[in-house]
Length: 300
Image (cartoon, rainbow, N blue to C red; front, side, top):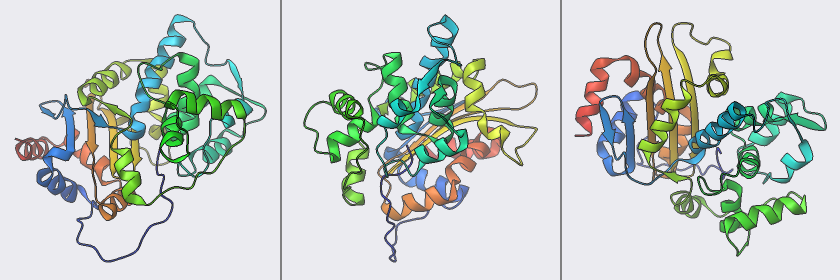
């Protein structure tokens, strides 16, 4: 899940940008009620129900890894692309679905492993909802596109029925979306979980071979560091920027961090999406002891 709004309004604003690590720290210090941070030595709003956008997909990933381990499914098992496409809501995921189809160069079918890679790498919501259905995750995590259909697609039933009815019809529909404020108000109500729970989930996944293959996809990108292994899943919805990340230095145990910003003003949010400063903030937090102490002090 990346971004619903597709039009950026251009106007002068006093909203603070999130354009570098220091800006993120300043925002954290100024808005502690809208921040959740769980890592070694810091547990801020760890038990508060928090919107996580696509970072919630580590829950789906853990269920997939368990299904593979127990033999419920095999990574090479096939699923029709038409079935996957049926769960897609065009223009609601920042082009993630189309980008995944292009990268995978799909034919008539994809493997479950490819589907999971689309969910983690491109952050495709359709892949997450299809996996949720196949793995029976209805009580653990909500349907992403079902919630969008309920909020903006005129579906008057529960989110599960919304997405099942939509997928069964097999016809993609582009929804009319409201402005940023209404989208942000909705985004603050969905994909919720407790930061401590996601921290525990990612801690388990950091030791799981199947999950690590997908979470460590940044290590396969050109220019990736050979001295620091990163496994991560981020997310963004209007007003929300999140990340669940672990880092591993040679000879050390994984350092797991879950970070969530919510209720971000429009221009602050857009600047954060552009800069990815929250990721640099997390990397510095994991590798710079002095910076870690500054963050801990800011959240006391």
